[in-house]
Length: 251
Length: 246
Image 1 (cartoon, each protein chain N blue to C red):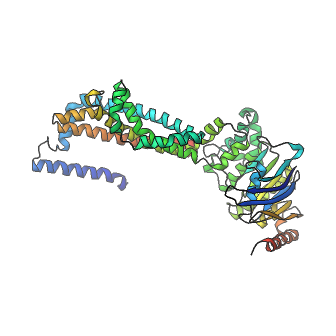
Image 2: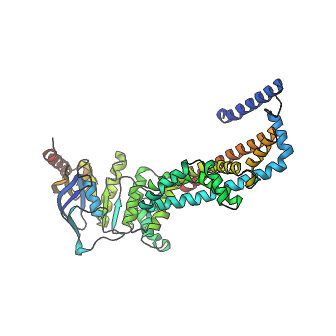
Image 3: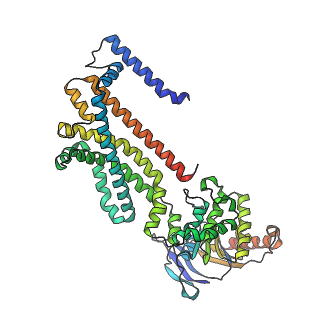
């Protein structure tokens, strides 16, 4: 109980100290705003910030959906064919280790629709954990069960749908949770790179805009919204994971 | 029912796992493949199942028919149930893979569960079952498709002694009732002596058949206490003393 309350207590103390120091030293809000200034910036600007949040989240979830489809499909194909795995794996790793900031300008030039361009960038960032975790889960299918399926003349599809995919579910869900937060990161990075040439409506764009205008409290308010979104996505996917696994294996 | 003729198995790394194995399995026999770790007894079982091919020699089934899907029942050392499926679903699995309909096989599945004493646990998930019960489900799963032969790879090795004794008794009784042909891999002399109608003693590196012993222990409650059982254990122990490298 005490341990569950600890992070909140620590947060409250830190916020109190922050506000206290800012007030005591008279730091102007355009250098470091206190928590109160940030909250009041949000309250006066939520008509701009909320739609911006919605826009960023739309990109995030579209990217997460695309990353899930792509990641699972590639993992299944890699499990089915060693040749395909050998051909694809190094390229997937290369795509993963190349910073998306470096590829984003190209994608924004190539993909005409700004929304689609952002989704593509965020998908590139997000798909790898789903791919690698799902592939690892499929590869870890117990050999005895594969033998059992073989002895009873199972088809490839039966083995996939009745055995390999359900067996890989826990790994897939771990990948999904990591990818969920990465999709948000990817969406924000893509928005930064796109700037006003992009969708011009997401939270990252609002952060850039506020920094040009030295509206530092508003920048912080946008930043807080992003952080909260990240936590909520992570926690929700964690909850989904627990629920699905409990349903799968019985309580 | 099947003839193993001069079978050898060499693995890709050059290890000779089995050398010149010749044996016949008659219908209705309960054969124990008995030997220490590394004697190739599990490999021989996999060859019989058709999961691997012999490097030399042949395994010929009656009338030259090769076992098709569902003709081999296999029980592994672990129960290896699907954790997301209840006992009924797990037992139904082989039938499902063979293309049988759930509705028309419900009775068969229920019978198989009843045969291993789990009629009351038809809808329990593996997580809710004990180790012994999981192994019972695994045996029901191996028998449900009416295989020609039941192959078992040290199925009771991971269970505690009390559970193991109970499962041995139930398996022996099940064999007496059904007359199923069983090949059972074990490293326990006592288990082989209690269960089998015939013991193939194997020696290691490379795996060979060192002795072929038909058993004749009276059936009944004091099977483990009978003088024939004690004598058989002594005979097998003596055989190992002779064939095991120092």
